[in-house]
Every structure is written in structure tokens, then in C-alpha cells.
Length: 112
Length: 116
Image 1 (tube, each protein chain N blue to C red):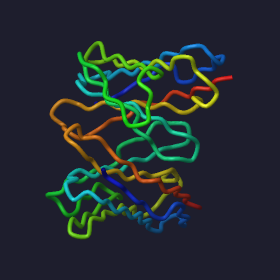
Image 2: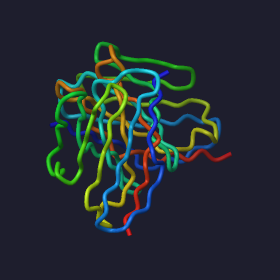
Image 3: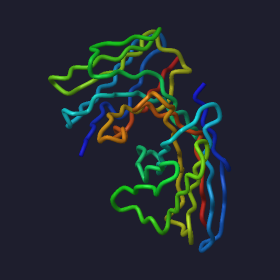
Image 4: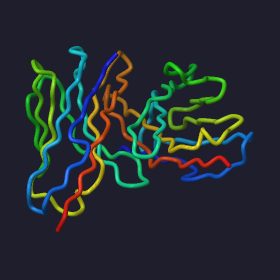
């Protein structure tokens, strides 16, 4: 099966600085990699995703990069704001049903 | 678009009773929905895949007789926790996949279950 590792587990950044979260996956057949933001007591919210035929994708302050050869992908948040504080999860799809294997999560704290 | 709701948002029940949680896709039809469980400060763990009109498929270690899943329509899946015990207390979250997006999953707001 798929195994996803995510680092760091916690990340504290000053407002305005950039935040980077990294994930690695084990199954070379995985071809879809979403990122979710989860606020306390709420369900995960899809913020960006990338498919294996693309190396990079950007949406305003958020970008994701994918290195298929190395089997790792990263989330980049620029110009961080206090409202970016949350837990971020990476995931990788596996099997024909498109199930998702989640990373352990990164607690991001943006301090004013 | 792609809104998923859950009901109830939280529930407290006595040990030994059963609890039903509903998951609805509000603005799209979902042939496949997923049920996850999340313990405090942990990641999401897939429990089962719910397919409209057929039996759910459960992940290894998840008791199908304890966690009953019914996907009776293209917009509704239900999870029933039977004979609940305190160790079943958790955050249960469903997700749904819109048609034409093979892997994309949109999540509901979650249901907090506390078994006393």
C-alpha cells in the first residue's frame, strides 16, 4: 500500500514569511496529490492539488511542486497571514477507487 | 460548488446504544463516498468506501458489523455505530467525490461522537 510521510510536524512562522511543508510517498503508481487545510473542530478543506503529469501548480499565495522521480511533493505558502494558521495534510491517491493516504499533518502557526 | 454536509455535528450517547451519522452531497451526485475517523491530534484514517447501490468496502481492521454503512442514494450515505463504547469516541468525517473527478474528495464538517 501507499505510505506518506510529512514534515515538519509543527511550523511556526512570522506573518509575511513563507512556509514550506514537505511530503514523500512510496507508491510510484500514485498520480494525484491533494493538500488539505483543517481548522480546529472542522473538516478538511481542499486548498490545492496536483496530478502526476504536472510539476508545479500555483493558486495565489499557495503553490505545490511535485518531483515524481524522487517521489516527493511540497506545499509553499507565501506572505503568510494569521488566518493561515491551521493543520495542513498532504495526501496521495492509491488503488482504482482513488482512496487517499494522508500524511501525519503539520500544525502551522503564523504569529503577527 | 462541491458542498458536503454532515448531521449531526456532535452527539453524546450512552455506552451500548447505536448512533447514526448522515453524510450528504448538497450540490452534486456522488456515486462514491468515504468515511474517515480522526482521533485528537492525529491524521485521518480511512474506515470504508461507500458505493451507491452496493455494499461498502471496509479497510483492514474495521469491523463491518459495528460500523454499518448504507449508501441508498446518490446524495446520501449513512454510518451507524452500533453498540457504541467509549473507545468509539472520535471525530467522524465523510467525503464525497463529484462525477468526472476521479480522485478529488470534498469533505464534510465532521461529527464529534462522545460515548459515555
